[in-house]
Image (cartoon, each protein chain N blue to C red):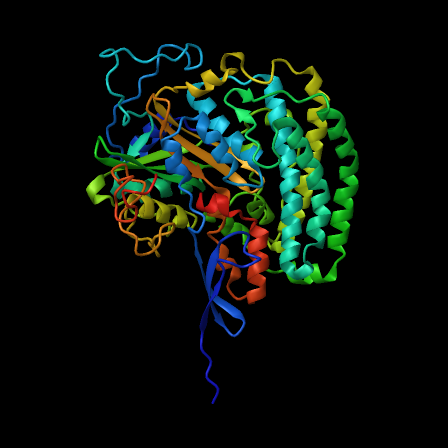
Length: 374
Length: 187
């Protein structure tokens, strides 16, 4: 008589495919997943309490480290929240520079995310390094503008810390020339790959009806067919003046999410074209003149009140909830991290799949543990 | 496309679900423009009193009616997306405030609902049975602030390890000298 039993195994926290220190306690019957329990907290760095003892501008470098792939987008969220709280105006040129940086970040992130997803499927680092070539060019641009490749700390309240150097635009235009060919080649290499399609179609489906109730955002939500994007729903900065589409998937499986990411890269390219065209004619400087000195940034005392501001980072909706008590330090500072909330449906998406699919599904959600644990 | 301001939301709730709102002190708008328009200077002694942090223009709802209000917002008003659940500890006033931000799929601003519970008996009904997305954020509020959510399917610690005692983000959690950090350690 054969007797089978369920087995509880640990995936992580130290595992090359878990996108950081993340542990999943998986209950399996043979190779099929019955239940999955995620365990967090291995990268908890107490970001929110550090912000309570720092001034608002001192938290800005810490936001770089939240989602360490997309530091510009994290900075954007905090800058938007404090500007809303304190009522600081941002000049038009600064807004366009911010959108430029945010969209470059989106291309950067989606290229790496797709590369990592295919790495999780077993193609090792080849697609990742292939995408990494374009990523390196964008990181060179960030280094030119802000001084650092990844932890940029480029945004300030009222604008950005310094204007774009004169070498920036020629290099950006050169990069833009090569991008459409990169997107086409990347997409073709992956659409025509039989192994990739077999491993990703029908895997990890998040049905459209329940997707929104899971509070997920970003390519995970749009892959399921819900066209919700913060840049369209509650436009911030100059996104309401720009022309772009919101790509959505149909079924909500891993393959859809991967297609949505490639389509979003193309839309970011479209936004970049418009920004480059309009940037020379924008008015204002790179920062609100009343906030230009570091002394003013340090001494900022927003009036008492609370605010919730959100931006569309490549991973989803990043929100900052700030409560001010009139002093230079926030009373409460909360980060609503997209990767954290996007992990809610992980257990339900993995049920019934094999253990190897768990890694692929996790890759398709595209998490960064810096954000999940803060 | 629902885009209710906080005053409209309060009026709507008072009309449709009478008795859910709790009285609050309104936040008075500052007379001058913004903090950036005038240079920051220290308030003179005696000129400005303590800041009333609990004064708000948003709808504050009784804890036991939270689920009714949330379902009303979702089913009747179209606020189907629950974006953010935050807990804030107001030590001086002795309350913990839970803030919920709801958004509608068509876009627009949030519907903000606040719930205030006493610090020593912090219990708020869980929204997880209706919004599975509230699961992790409520666990975070439980772990870091000690708010209990009756109705939550799996209310366990999420960041701190299971045997940890205390709720670290509460304002009275000692920064030095608690049992996990000795007095010699630098904080």
